[in-house]
Image (cartoon, rainbow, N blue to C red; front, side):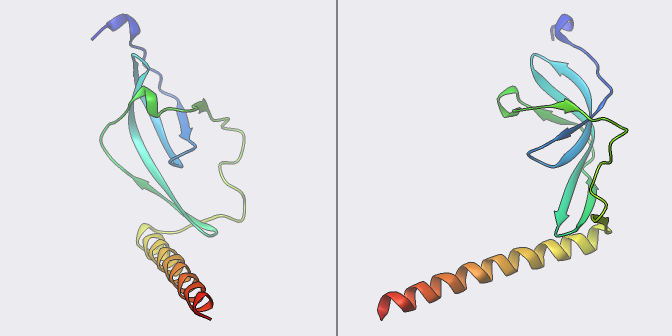
Length: 116
């Protein structure tokens, strides 16, 4: 490993795409090694930060935008509330099941209308 390209940056940052929070462990050849990674699960007006554990490596071509958070600004809007992990997983499953049901119902209605 080229030690001249290695920088340690212990800063809190956010990933817009994954809605996760983590600390940058290393910056090596435009790839990122992350530690203390959390997956933020958002369902409706509720969320849960699920710790993912271990290290996570992001390849350079998967990084679109990265920036430092301002600790003075609120992390979430005031109407978003935290839920325990089991409750948010149940809510996420119910939301996904509801979307599948809506999609299937829409396809069924469109099929009925085509037959008329």
